[in-house]
Image 1 (spheres, rainbow, N blue to C red):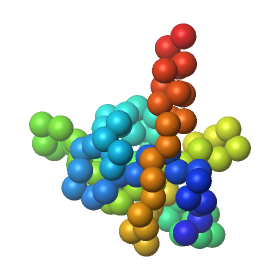
Image 2: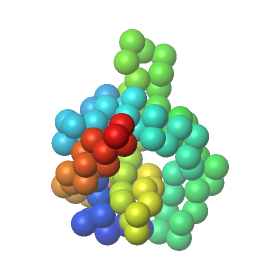
Image 3: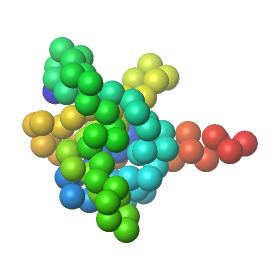
Image 4: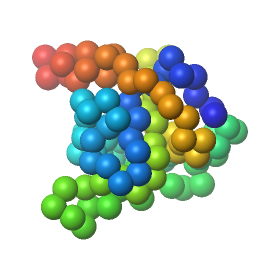
Length: 103
């Protein structure tokens, strides 16, 4: 695992449209990370895999096709592939960031 558990702000489980904490949906993920590359291992490798590659948009509502974790690290945000399927709690910091974004 390349991220720290206390840095996790949202987790998306394969096949879902909502984050595990239920506060964010896949549209939020796409809006924030559109073509951002996903870190796929503990060495920071991205292998060219983007957030859009992990979202199936062919349905009425998009769903994730990979287990993803969104983190907030040193005032920056990243998306990781969650190969380990580790249980992580969601944070309220992303709520705060969204609330202040429109000000």
